[in-house]
Length: 639
Image (tube, rainbow, N blue to C red; front, side, top):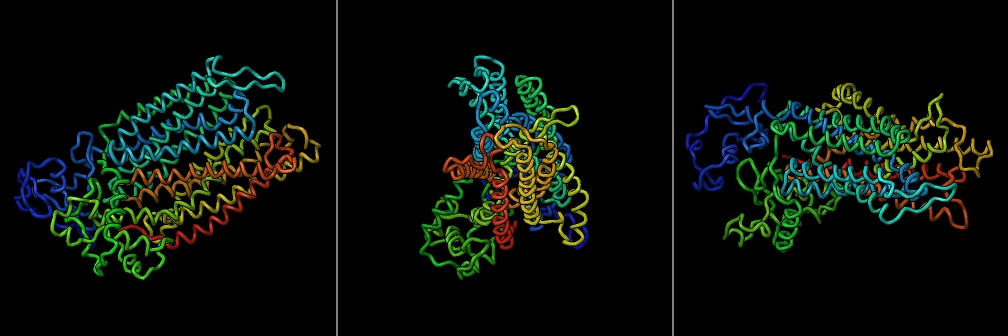
C-alpha cells in the first residue's frame, strides 16, 4: 500500500518463470529450480515488504516471510498458520504448563514431607531445579535454529519430558523408592537409589521442558507473517494469549492438582500431569498440516564466531567512510537461509569511529571491530566473495552480532526480576506458618498461586482490550507501549511485590511475639489470605515484564536466531534462580554467625524473613535504575 492506494500488479519478465535456476548476483543459469528458489522468484518484496505479483498467479496468496508448509511448499495464507494453527499450539502450551506446574508448584512440600528435607535445603533444591529447566532452553534453541527446526525439536524434547514425568510417578508409587515415614522427630534419610530415581525423573523433566520452551512461543509467533501489517498485530496479541494459556494451566495446577496431592496422595497427583503431557503432545501433532515452518539457517554460534574471526583478520584495514561499500549479497533475502537482510546501523557506525557509547556498549569496541568482517579486502576481491565466511561476512551477519550485543544490557537487567520470582518457594514456606483454615476448609499454602494466575489472566485481558487502545491514542504506537516501556512497568510492580511480602511478614512476627509463639514451630493466628496481595502484584508484574520480555527478544532477534533469543530471555530465569539460591545461601551463612537462628531458620517464628524480602526489594530498586538507563539508550533493529 502506498499513499492509501493499492500498488498495480507488476508483471515479471517471462525468463524468470522458466524452469531454470539463476544466481541472483551474476545471472548465470545453473541447475533446475527447486521450490525454495521458485518461492523467491514468485514473491519479491521491496523495503516495505509489499510483494510483486505474477500476472498468472496472485503472490498475496502466499506468506511474505519465506515460510513453507509441512511438505516444504510455499505456505499459503488461507490454508496455513494464523489463529487456526495457533489454537492447537495454545492448547499444547496450556496442557504442558499444567504438567509442569503440577510438579513445580508443590515440589517443596514433597521434598519436605516425603524426602525429609529441611526448609533451606528444599527451597534451594527447588530453585536449582527451576533454574535448570530454563538453562536447558539453550540446548533446544540451538538445535532448532541450527539443524532440526522448531517443530522436530518440540517433538523430540516432548518425548523426553513425558518419560521424566512417568519416572516421577513411578518413584512416588513404589514403596521401595521412598524412604520410611518419620517416627516422631526422627526422619530416615533417603537412600542413594531413592534420591537417584526421583531426581533422574525430575531432571529429565527439566531437559524436556527446557528443550521445547523457547520453540513453542517462537513457533506460535511464526504462524503470523510479520511482513503483513494485519498479521503483525495478531502476532502481538498472540504473546498475550500465549501467556494467558500458561496461567490457565498454572491455575488448575495450583488448585485442583495441589489439592489432590495434599489430600489424595502423590501417586495420582503426579499421574495427572503425566496424562496432560500426553494430551499436549497429541494436540501439537494433530495440526501438523496447518503449520507454517521456517527453515533452520545453520548454527548461529558459528556465524557469530565467523564475524569475530573475520574481524580480527582485518583489524589493520582502514574502515571505509561509506558503509554501502561493505559486503552484502544482492536481492531481498540474505545469504542466511530463512533470514531477511538487516540494514546497517548508520548512526552507530558513524558514532563508533568517534569512540562514543551507544546502547550501553562501547561502540569503539563493538562497532568498527565487527564491521571489519564485512570489508572487501584486495584478497577477497580476487576470489569468490562467498567462498570463505571466515574471511568475509555480510552486513546482515555482522548485524546479527551487533543486535546480540545491544540486547545484552537489557537482558542482564531482567535477571533480578527473575530472582524476585524465584522466591515462590519462600512464599509457600511463609504460608505454612500462617493460619490455613478458612471456614471449614484447609487451604494448601501452594494453592495461593491461584491468585497469581487469576491476576495474570485479568491483567492480560485489561492490557489487551483496555490499556493498549488507550495508550495507542497517546503514543501513536501500533502496540500502545513499546516492549521496553512495558518491561519497565513490570519491574516497578516486582518491587511492590517484595514490599507487600515484607509487610505481611512483619505483621506475622508481631503476632508471634504477642502470642508467645517465637520458640514454637507452629502457625500463628493470622490468616493465610493476607498473602493474596503479594501474589496479585506478582501476577501483574509478570504480565508487563515477562510477556514484554518474550515479545522484545522475538521481535528484535534476527530471523534465523529467534529460538536462540527466546532462549536467552528464558535463561534470565535460570540465572535469576541461581542468583536467588546464592543469595539464600549467603543470607543463611551471614545471619547465623555467633549462634543466631538467622533470617530463614526451620522455625520461621525465630527468624526475620521480612528482612530478606526488604533486601530483595532494595536490590530490585537499584536494578530498576540501571534498566532505565539501558532502555533509554537501546537502538531498535532495522529490516
